[in-house]
Image 1 (cartoon, rainbow, N blue to C red):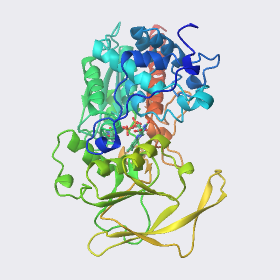
Image 2: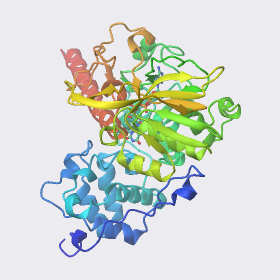
Image 3: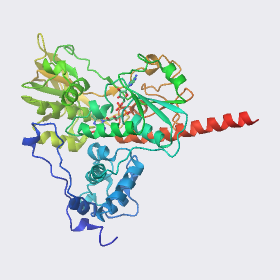
Image 4: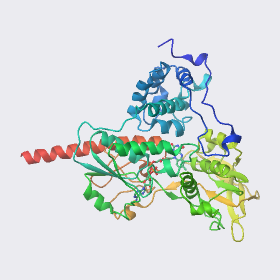
Length: 480
Ligand SMILES: Cc1cc2nc3c(=O)[nH]c(=O)nc-3n(C[C@H](O)[C@H](O)[C@H](O)COP(=O)(O)OP(=O)(O)OC[C@H]3O[C@@H](n4cnc5c(N)ncnc54)[C@H](O)[C@@H]3O)c2cc1C
């Protein structure tokens, strides 16, 4: 090992080439190019192979990072792929969009003195190579099982669970109200972070593995939840969180003010070739507009960068806390700044001004006061500090809450937490209803793709235990 690894002392960190901001402002392609094979090997060889791999500990999937870095450094890419795909259903997706600076790379032990190993980029390189070389194959279970599982939601949690269950030979049907597979991977996250072919080739793989999709099918409207429970041996709810939080301020109802996800979905649909009325009419198009995005998370970052690419006159991001206290990834802020986005920190909207449509956002400056019970400093308005910011399009990106599932599923017995997320027993991942499991954002609240994958995998394992235990009990009853 010694001669291949531990090269961090002499080899500096090198990310794949990032396209210049002036170029990427004009298109929706991903901003990083791929590593060449020797570059991936060189960067993987920077890993110090430390005794306690904090990168692995801090990865929600506990990916075996040091080992697949070593295999990459040694040019054994097929084995690196085997290892990385053993713990993660979508390594090339996580490699692209995980906030590595807060997870694996942020905990890399060489990070302090030498800058971390570029784990995400190597992970993406390994799996993209596997796809190119035909190593990623449809699932052929060793034996088919008769039981079927119904999964509500074709986002990363539902898809990861489907793949794991199919591997065990279960018959898997996925129901989604969207017309395409992927959940927020397809309609939330923009193409410049995750090109849609990456998601679509995963869909094809699952179809080729004989997973069935029922699209344009909203559970609770097109098919009842009860019917689904009758149809399947177990049901997994992986519906995500979609109720956009709103702002209570005068003028919030003016035309020109829109929820962030409507805007991003429209842009993603247009990118996929759909004709989108709200883009054609200009309602959700930032071209030649002064755009103000309110919020400081991933969704806000995606909105500002989409607006730049649509040809906005100016793009401002209004956030009530400061840079150090924002929830979004610092990497994304850096990309946005390079692309010309202006961040207005410590600033909150007080009113939306305009006659027949929004023309300005009236903002107030914020001072961060004493920490509250959660430890975060409380934002306090500074008197007489108003500023009016010009705006023709305002996007609200303040986060999401769960929809009322017991109501929409007509299942009042389905237990929810105080936040409206589904209540599960974390050991069994089962909800308050027998045979109904849940995973992803609908359990955690708005979270990350990597956690959705983790939950989907865990839920698949628990469903398997549930069904096999039930079958064993039925067999012993029959034998008596
Ligand atoms: C704009 C945006 C950007 C993000 N960027 C990142 C990022 O860069 N990195 C990262 O790690 N995370 C990011 N996230 C978070 C991440 O996308 C989510 O945590 C993840 O997608 C959750 O997966 P999920 O499977 O639980 O839900 P979702 O991906 O939301 O999928 C849920 C699916 O359920 C379907 N559904 C809902 N209700 C019903 C019903 N009644 N009947 C049938 N189908 C239904 C929906 O149509 C959807 O397809 C981002 C989120 C947003 C909104």
